[in-house]
Picture 1 (cartoon, rainbow, N blue to C red):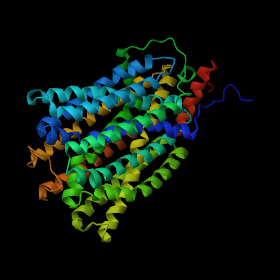
Picture 2 (picture 1 turned 60 degrees about the vertical axis):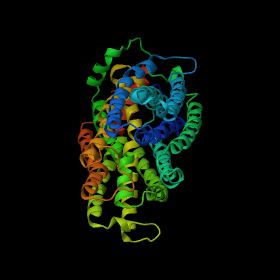
Picture 3 (picture 1 turned 180 degrees about the vertical axis):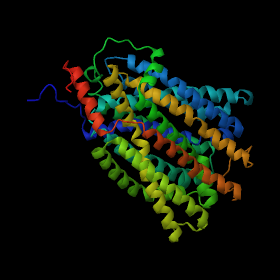
Picture 4 (picture 1 turned 90 degrees about the vertical axis):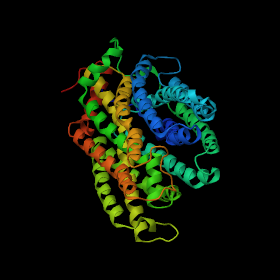
Length: 483
């Protein structure tokens, strides 16, 4: 028989964890699609580059400000169909409707009203996106509280995200762009249908996965303490692990959004390498190796804790970035080809595979680390507020990463692209070469260095999380924590 002082973990099956991860994949499909929205806005809707990139920044900031309110709403919800499931479904519906309106009707609106209409529909899109993504972070607490099982989310998330972004880029560069002659209205219509359909299916599967977990007995420690919106600041102020994770993940996110920006990808593969379709083909080839590296990293995380895995993967990413810079400066990038394999191609592929694996671990392990911070808040104060905790994180994360579109837009305008963004047909120049390296390597390294500094002050390692779960268990069973 179990002793009252022994923590009893709320675990899920591997299938439940894997299917719930599809909630994040469902929103990442929309995120991938929206990476090309600036091409729709400038090329189809006829809006100016600087205006569009400024809107992207403003909308990202607005996105951040919606998070605290939505997190508060989630924490206050105790419906018959759960705390999280209603908002997963509602968010996905809003995403589908807003994307149809944004890409299907903006170019039909009179020119003098087009910008305002674009902003309005984009704002609705953001609300739906926030509803669904907030549940990905917050529902981690009911899915599992076992420190050794939580990293499994990262494993599935890393695999699914790799498949989404790699196969998505392959379809865009190798199929849809050639088929439709660029980022045309036909390109966006066809891509939109696929995104909406697959995302809806993934959302349904994730709702089923969490169905038996999203119940009141899993909603933290019973408490009569009433949480108000103005409690956000005291929560942030009193939770050092959350503060440090915000710094680490938000700077990582800024770096990743600049690196993955569609303009950066086109500049690297279309201009520097001279073959935009290679971006998708290389990704498909490297995917299996990236997944293997993710498996290895998650095994490491389950043994030594999520913090250790995050720090190690970040150091590896920095080291590989330095090697990439050396490679870009010394190699003839136009010789990189899959039809005629050579040393340059093999070195490029090896560096990209290793870095993709390291980045996959570092970026995806942040989500279960947020659950650790939420459990720390319960352990310290008795408050079970996963929605607020997750959206506090998202709020700052989005405010900082909001500047990615502006960074890209302003910097390419600085080197001469004020009216149109660079395309695969743009000739290679010195400024384009160095700006591509800045986007693809320089900004990420700055973000990773900031993360490493912040992790020096983040103390939720594997041992500490076992102590926290024991204490929470004691609170639930009304037993005084043992010394």
